[in-house]
Image (cartoon, rainbow, N blue to C red; front, side, top):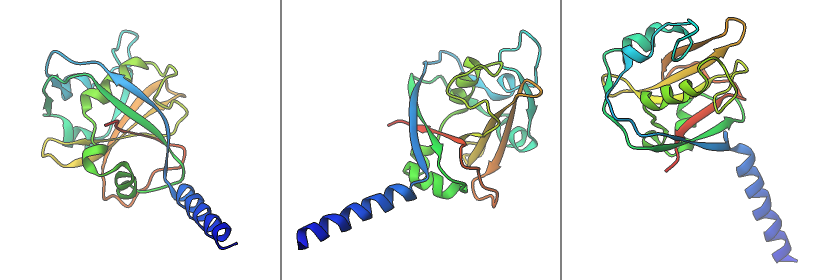
Length: 182
């Protein structure tokens, strides 16, 4: 009888732990290697024309201030994981659950590569239902920032914003979080 009680207690602990998790794995996506340097201010530009590489209609002032001027070196092929945010949360608990800043960090090269696949809001790994697609990237000063990419279906364009990871603002449940898969 004691063994049965112990098993029930362990099962309850496991269920409680799982129910407290913020993130639920949805999948992974490969990002191809790049040959050239990635100049952020040349790629993340407002352009909603038919021929735009990515239909970006809004770039937040924090993003411009923190990331324009940044140049990333060529990168090898990488793989990112994307997860559903199960309930509303701020950045620090999300980063902790991802395994810390090193695991959470993505590059702007990777973010842009994913956006290129869905340049006009097509279905893919990025949400296009109004929820945020959350990435964490280092700015020109090496500070980890939250980068939010979301599709504005009404206007037919992408919004790109950035915020500090210590911001009191949180993210809504249902948003998607991208991070390293290693």
